Length: 123
Image 1: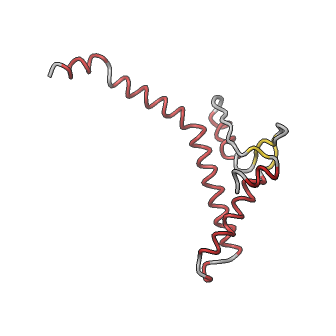
Image 2: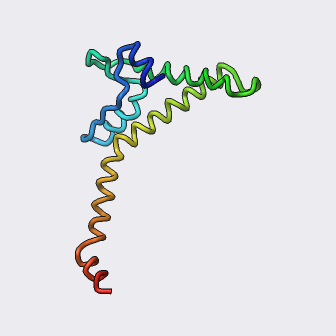
Image 3: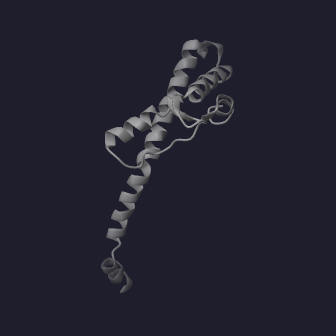
């Protein structure tokens, strides 16, 4: 619902756009705000209705799968909040993950330097 139906109806772009560079605080703020701010099809920024409505809809649908004692409006909104929180965590990983991967792969390449591979090949 958050990635197809609501964005199509509300003319929003559900994708996450990385900052990719800049100060850490700005990039972190961008990632944490992404569940609440998105680009419209017109190119401007606006409140992310599709993500919030999709999370609330998913929380409401999940009520059908729980016993009557575990249903309710409060539980629906808490499940929606958890979904939005995980979206913010995912955006943070998408923002900083490539940088961390690049940094880790450089360290692994340095450990596997030609001198260490030459010693290993003599055995």
